[in-house]
Image 1: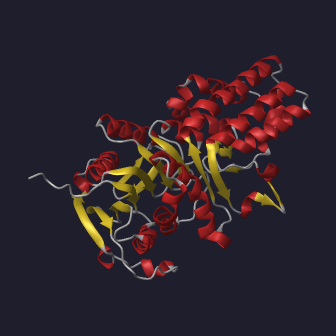
Image 2: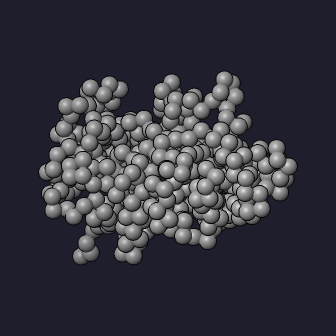
Image 3: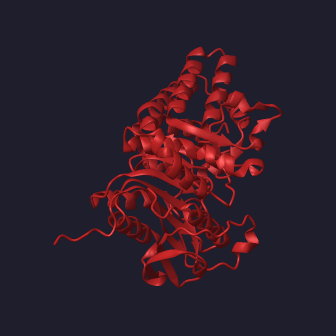
Amino acid sequence: MCAIPAHSELAWKTLIYMQADNDLAPYAFWDLREIAASTKAHGRSKTIVHLDLPGKDKLYEFEVLPDNKKVSQTLEDYQLATLKDYNLKMLREKNEASSKGQEKQLLDFIAKANEDYPSKNTMLVIWGHGEGYGDGTQFGGVAIDQNPEDRLGIPQLEKLLEEYYEQGHKKLSIIAMDACLMQTIEVAASLKNKSNYLIGSTQIQNFKGLPYHLINDYVELELEEEATSSDSSESYYLSKKIPFLLQEYYKDEFESETVSSLSVSELEQSFLPAFDRLFKKLNQRLETYPFEVLGLRKAISQVPFFLGQTKDLSLLLSRLEEYFLEEGAEDLARLSSRAQSALNYSILSYAYGSDYRTGEDEFYLGRFKAFGIWLPNSKKQYRQRIDKFEKSKLYASATFKSYREFLRILFEKGLL
């Protein structure tokens, strides 16, 4: 007799690497309650979680099963919660002390879940605190663990996903960062060959995070009807929908939040070449007119900045276009406009809160796209972090060489 597989192929699965060994533990239990309430007994999707709670003892991996308990909207109701309060299918318990760090934990988790829960589409969620691009040695990284102190640096995340694919696993449909400060071009470029779509926030995110119940409801009730042609179209529609679901979930709370979904193929094929052409031409102009960096500095300073020394990439390009038109540099204005158009193709959808509006008008006629780029505000900030960025694949690539040179002109020639 042939062996019967433990799980037939699912339409969807969501893998959540949940790093709650910090002050986020109550929010982890909140999200688990939302997931359980929206999970269908015989639905087309399943949610599998790797969970690290405060302390140095255990790591848990489980499938979230449906239950009909009420989803409280009060944080205090989750502060004393335990896993016993949930309907879970426990898959593995591990000793954290012997688990060899988060890179090994995440790789083992997604590889095992892929084998045990084969699916046409997979969304991987990295859940926890985030500090943007970095190698985990200083500022930067995601999934920050307090006991023992550890985090996932972006180069380390890139490396473990490469190993995952070398093992022969199917490509991830979506990578979502349920964390602050992670939706930047530096992070996206590191992960561009690791999934089809990327979702995240370029700013501080509400600790309640992604609306998992709304995502589950959409996958179960609407997604199949919207995307019947292929599995890849399903991941496209879900990626495009999530920013709107997040905005719907927070409603009146949606003030400083940002979120966007990104097509990595469009980023690589369309935007990065257009971006390179703009800064290559700009650098040539600055070599001829070196004191123009002073005017550029003033123009750039008018673009709002976020923690992690990032600026919204679309706003930056918009402000540069305006500046070049003011200076009569129409060729550079056209290149700025073309880079914006290419970026628009790369970003499937985006949403942002009321803090990014001035009266009735949105910043730069709605050109804010919730996708950031590192652009420090001073020579000191530049010197503190440039060595980390220069080690990234993005800064080593031919299509980003001109922006790296632009930063050098700004911060290493003494005018700033």
